[in-house]
Length: 354
Length: 188
Image (cartoon, rainbow over all chains, first blue to last red; front, side):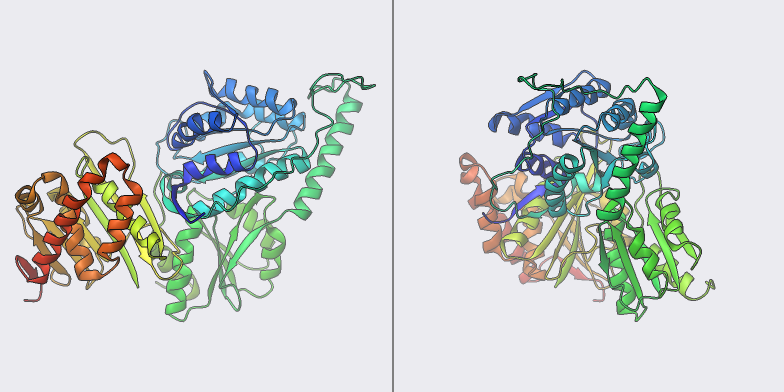
């Protein structure tokens, strides 16, 4: 099959179907509505179920039910809807249920607007819901990568029995790029012996629950979760490097902002400036190990975000005081212009003289 | 080869679909392409625009903040985006609907009465293709053959009868700039 020109939101839907997702529960919100729109048509074609719930609270609890029964299931929304889902997300994490949650981030806080943003980074990587838990958070930067990461999202969710969030923004959802969907693969979805699918003469009941009423038991559960998060944090850090060899200044950016920063790195190369880019693909676990290594050779870092400065905290933790970490951001639905980021890079490299 | 093309006009002028057609044609030719629409709380009759990037190299940023080519289908689009065009770039002005001149002196400006020409050949609906024809004649960003193939791929079969009119519109636009009619290079 040749390449197709696809919108990012549609690519999420097709990628999910190809990854074996057969259940989608959601509620429309811009800028991701093309995704439920696509799946409303596509799911019945593959014998799956598309259901528009009455709210985001209902959607995420339907996800809980389907995941508990062992299905590959997904929901999607944007900022305000994801906020409504936080209680359910915490329950999913507590009950260790694999599922995929898509957040196409828009301008906030509050109702904000429908323009692209990255201001939900803290919510995605720090919890958002209550309790000691982590989501695995993936951040694609192209329509092709969306398709590729959908497969990984469902695989990681099953591997670790953990909710996975795919985080994009309005630009990634609305843009069209050629995608190679590849051959349809025979899927190997792991057996879920823990799923609540009936007693089947097993000795013990399979119970899907996040209630541990006895503090001693709840502590054991939290420690077990903590061990799992440690395993994920050490084994699943992903990133892309661009022109980092010999770079004196390293930009750190993900998603749409990383696309802009790639253009900036190209501009810098044309001007003979040693500037590279680290693009985190996993936002949690954050690819801190590599950034820490680069802090030995690079002279400074610049976090470029569509927020007031959220990921920059993780960059600072990774650099750990070894080198200065700067920040450049646009907010409220505005996208950094390559020229402006370039000027900022020039300002930093020149030692702060404009 | 790199072109960052910004197409802007009223909603309903075929601005977004013209951009998709260009992007698809670039893909047909094996080039790297990206298409990105403006989106927002838009209303009927409001403005619409999209950016199309076509390049031999992988596309770093799909955002067209400094276009090499601007197609202004209406006056607000010319006023809003004229200054963003790179030095030495091209501006196509739909002079059927735009009664002002471009003020830039460092870009090539082509005044094309697209709606009038489209009506002359049969339908004002193909005004965008008049300009598209001029654009590919001057830049060579894609070939007319790639556009024809794309139209066949993208349009449902019952609309294929519209393809000859679309191609005729493109040839009219190409022919206009080939003969130098109604153009004004800013330097001259």
